[in-house]
Length: 291
Ligand code: FAD
Image 1 (cartoon, helix red, strand yellow):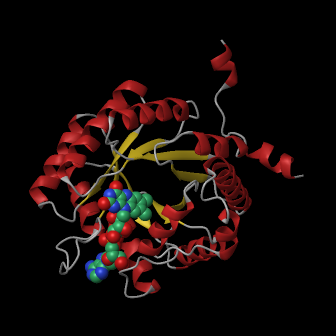
Image 2: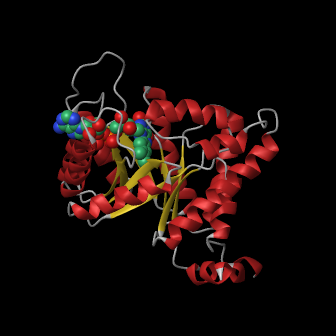
């Protein structure tokens, strides 16, 4: 029955993949190999993150244009407003538009330590982008609540404000507690959000790194997950398989709960995301590739 369920999903699931700007030549090669492999799955879009230092920002712009030109995929740059002026942001948006980029992931960005109240939040960035052009905009959502939020309710109201300002969909922070995603989705519907709340899936291959990141971002690491990785500190191969299997189980449950769109935090590697997509019925067009 399970296989039947998955077979019936074939062709109905949309995926998107997130990458980050590589720092070395070796990482650049890995990125392009990953993009090439994952592009065969015809993602709805791919996105590239935007870092805090200006070098990385320029790299985001150039990689996005390169992905668009080389692969024809819809390439969505992430854009943060935390330490840019309105004029700079308008300029960046215009430049993207002139280069045929119509999709943007609009974020506030993390506050530098000891900073005061920011001038702009992500909702303001959405408004600014919409004033430049009719971009297709994705924003961030936090099933387990953003660490700075006053409370869950105000965080949810903020998400609604971002969508009301013109964003088309939300992509969630990664999570492992499926219940918290499902409850969050229900709460979104209850306050009148009708946009998709796309789960952000992080295939885990480095558990120790994950734990640090999860603490910073307020994401629960359940005991069952911790347990899965015990004893594997020096065994990256097994960690990878366990990580893939955990994510496969998650997407299986989510798809049974009606989720049709998935966003993958690929960490610039194709292997796990590709395998997870395969189990969801997201596969290359075999006829096209065998010709
Ligand atoms: P906002 O929606 O502005 O919310 C930030 C916080 O402020 C929340 O706690 C919210 O409740 C609160 N808030 C909102 N409006 C107000 C207000 N008017 N008054 C008081 N409080 C308010 N970071 C990067 O630097 N680069 C990236 O490429 C990047 N990509 C990401 C992709 C995804 C899918 C996700 C989920 C996160 C990403 N981040 C990225 C991290 C993100 O920048 C941080 O989580 C950041 O701290 C919040 O960004 P936001 O867009 O959610 O902000």
